[in-house]
Image (cartoon, rainbow, N blue to C red; front, top):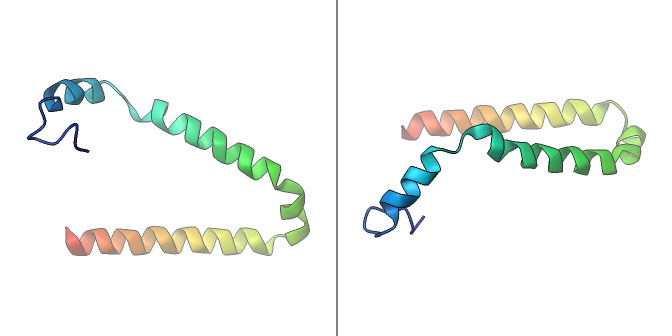
Length: 75
């Protein structure tokens, strides 16, 4: 954050480098790590049953909706 702040002498150079990076190269390692993490706990998830899937989906939807409402409020 400090390296790209307007008062930083490296801001212009880093901004040029960051403009070339797309979303996919940043998201791919995160998704791979998440997949490995879930695969590691797959036997435990099977024992919990289908209800944990419903709880997870509701929690994620609630987080997304509340985050959207907060963003719209402060926008």
